[in-house]
Length: 254
Image (cartoon, rainbow, N blue to C red; front, top):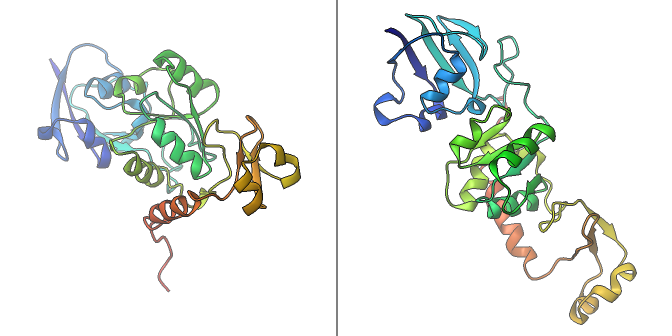
């Protein structure tokens, strides 16, 4: 039986049993097996991988593992460029567009609050989610590792946190999104883009207390929902400020 030594780096270890995390380990195999299939058989979805070195040389997912190979597997690099090396997936989607599975509804709303294009279809099955991710070039966010192993999914991420607010922190860090945050520019209900609208144009759709106390409005170009700075606005601002506090300081020392 042939064998290869694997070493996974950084957050890829989240997918491994404790005795295989942060250390080299031997994996035995039979026959001709691609590096992609072998990595996924070890529990790591291919969408989480950006760079594979075999015996110090960069390879792509088609590489057939050989007896005695030493394989180093690295996660996706979003915040810096490794183009001199071979990527095993298409280039990152620099304009982030997401599709989320049915278990991430609260995360969807928070991402929309921050201005990100986040598609969410209740009761959508796995095959449809994978097709949407491929056809619309959307990064698939899910907690289902099996979903990320579908062949047609090229951009995806397994969300580790269970608390929706912590999930936001995780996604912002993972995709280096802090500088792209644009709060209150997208409809929380349907994901449409919000546009300024004159008060007179929506007057007949406003509750009496809103007509009397507010003059600035936005309307969703897709569903027509009207937004204004109500009592919830300050709470949302505080929540956004809390997330922004986590932005890493990338400034260079003087």
